[in-house]
Image (cartoon, rainbow, N blue to C red; front, top):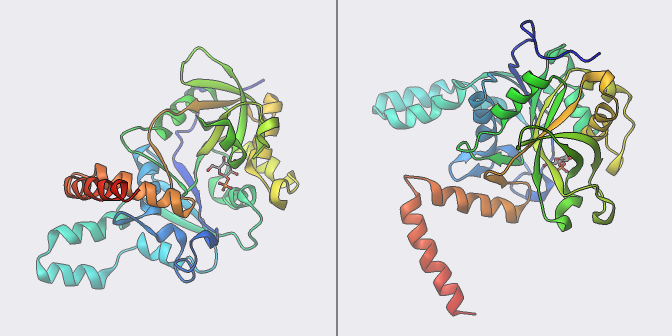
Length: 307
Ligand code: G1P
């Protein structure tokens, strides 16, 4: 018997952000700086992700970190020295920028120790999360705040129970980069029932072109499953494999639904995508956009002439 949302259902308040990765794709920039701290325009990538969690009503944020990740903790903490200096100068605008990240959310940190995969990182959140449903946000995916996704996922989880993943249709040739979901329609145009999940399938074997993008709202039963999940693709404990077990047997932790996202998503996972994300976000910024677009237009014209 699967419990549906009722009055006693706890309001989802916790977000888990895995941030223990080594960021080797960005070396040498990430030799001494966590990749999550690389700026996207003028804000570290990780701040967008925490802002997104807070925007969806999740103000308790647990980061799963590792060695060399201290700058993450410092970024979301006060910096009295800098604040004092800006107060003395009367620079309110920059003071607000410094205080923004430390006022955002209640931050918690736990270290992953051995990097044994995304599933293992999520399992490190078990003592903090307890028995409540919770969200997981992966830092390589930035979701435009104008296209709220997580809030919709929370709404679906609160209505349906179980777990909810974010899905996006991708070109079949790209599906091997993602977890892939087999789905069935529901009464809601943007919601599907997930019947099967495969981590990074070969395109010929992919059950669909629905890719799992890095947002999840999970039932706490996933922890028990993760404890028993053997290393999968890449020798790592895969979150997708644990979710597959939930999707295959609703009696364990309720159904798995997918919210199909059609909004703006920026991938910052590799260098090319990171550069594209910066250009797109800079173009859309009210303060920087108009000048930057003008310059970009000129630059592209010059490049075209050279072809
Ligand atoms: C992870 C997940 C994968 C998911 C992807 C979304 O893979 O394992 O299922 O589709 O994030 O970005 P990664 O990109 O960390 O290799």
